[in-house]
Amino acid sequence: MNFSPIPAILKDFSKPFKSNGFELYAVGGAVRDFCLGKKNSDFDFATDAAPNDVKRLFPKVIPTGIKHGTVTVLFKGEMFEVTTFRTENGYVDCRHPDSVEFVSSLEEDLKRRDFTINALAVKIPDPKIIDLHGGLPDLKNHLIRCIGVPHDRFMEDALRMMRACRFSSQLGFEIESATFDAICELKDNIKFVSLERIQEELSRIIMSSNPRKGIEALSRSGLLDLILPELAACRLVQQLGYHHEDVYYHSLSALDAAASRDWSLEVRLAALLHDIGKPPCQEKAENRYTFYNHEIAGAKMTKELLRRLKYPNSVIDKVSTLVRNHMFNYTPDWTDGAVRRFILRCGKDNVDDILRLRLADQLAMSGNCINPNVDQLESRIKAIESPSLTVNDLALTGDDLKAMGLKPGPVFSEIKEFLLQQVLDRPELNTKEQLSQIAQKYISNRH
Image (tube, rainbow, N blue to C red; front, top):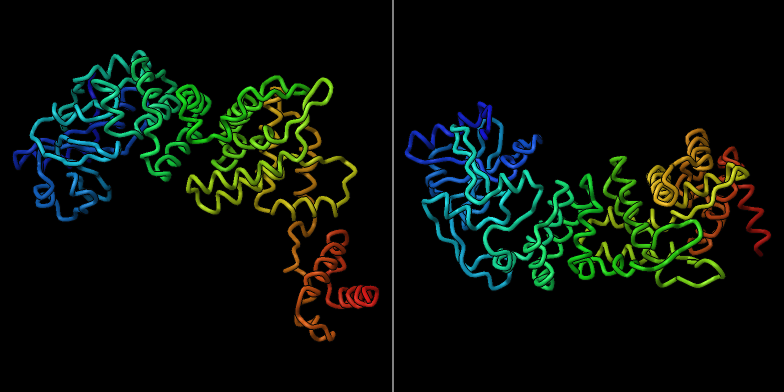
């Protein structure tokens, strides 16, 4: 198989290497994805040129990882990562090599890589694909296989275990048996990987087109118990009633539903985690189980686990809010004030995603997303006036309350909250004159 046509910019990029007696190879993901018919313009390169040689070949070079032979070249508006052929020795922490040795052989360099399908190379500008480890047959057979001895590859870098699960979900491939057995054997070494890197791989699994496959690989290998014990605890937790799956598989089905509609990371995380509060809340009731307040317990657990995995605060806040509010029970008799309170409770920026989560939950239960109540609520939210009122939107300010003879303190919050409830029901009351009258009456009744 040939990598053809080679983009003109890559041919131009290779010229300084060739004219100075060096070789340049495109390696890894871009070559793999080309063979799969997928678009990928994120090229990585390997060369026999030392990092300082590369720096001399181009005017703009960033020493991004020069200790390990990697530099980033700025070329014609693109950024190309170039790494010198190398071998690695010693992995005391199961993550980083103790030493790196630059070599002149592509063959030696490819031996250190993780999976056969990621060890394909193309010598630019020659289009022929170089496959020294059976990557092309594994692509054809849809297999994730370690190069050489799987145990050795995972002892070198424990993150590769999660990467195998991630590639399985992204590509829809199976993990080859010896490779999977090594993951099961060495799963405890995931403790050597930083939580930031674990979070990154987990997010890639969740954002793949087939996240269930990756999560299931984590589960079957035992990695899920170490990374997301809260989700692992949902296995075999029966629900009955409207549910045909246990809590764990229902969560995967909800995640699948969110992924099938290409919804955001936050919605997918919420779909996966929305019921993790059920195991501690489970109670038996005749021919079914109840899980009262599981959304409250789940929101707290979600916040804790996302914080543990070093997700950004914005993601933590949004996902925990989605989980906390996914059990809303809208009925057509809600007043406009009730709709406004729902928006206030969820946050205006979260409402659309709350509705998406509800639909993903329903899809997981029944296989369809026909829900007239959700559709009607969505229409009412769009049509309603002043949907995002908060105490900060009140026409009566703290200075106005001071002018009425009140001293700042808890009473301010009490009065403002009372006024907000009136305005949520009747937005036309939100004028300084009318709110002053309501506040005066409230104060009089309070005393």
